[in-house]
Image (cartoon, rainbow, N blue to C red; front, top):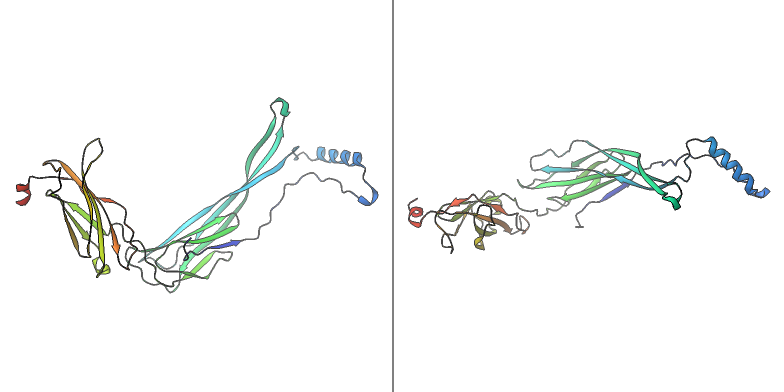
Length: 296
């Protein structure tokens, strides 16, 4: 768990009612114990209470967690809508059936128990600006009577100002700026018939003075078969509005055949993390003869 994670678990007071069984007569230890009399009275009480099942006992409990993800974009309001969480408890009950020597045994089933419901919302106090592709994302969960709050990915190191009470209204304040992943579609590429890959950077102004690494793989498009890699590599260049990767001299290229490029990028600097984005794919382009490509 990263240090910026906010974790708050709140236990709400809930009364758990035990199954109502036939009342067994009280024993006065000062007067001694008459076992036969107690057993007789217990049997009579059990017969009188038709709701009692012989040898019935609670086997266990489980709850079904309910969660809501709350995400704030750069232009979203600083207050989320109020939402409802509902967690249901299930109780396992078991009983003995038949004679174990003749195939009888323990039978179990689940039945719904308590149902817990809470209202919650998330408010960002003194909100700071986000980069256009960034988001502050949180998760609120109700598991039985316990309400939990987590940050999934945020652009700031948030601290809890208030909330976590019975209504679950969380208020957060931003701390230091935290680098997030770059926009996965901030750089888009296109392959032409001359086998030249052009990539255009949507966020050049935000990364001025930094570098970018472009990882690529030129592939031949083969119908109903695996697409072989014709050329692959990586280049690191200063951030610019566009980038050109010349793949026209790759060995094995054939005129009239279809090709495309798989690529991903990573930002090198302080604005974003330096992890590669997910792999994207260009259009498919049919390779033209060199003379035709030069005349374009």
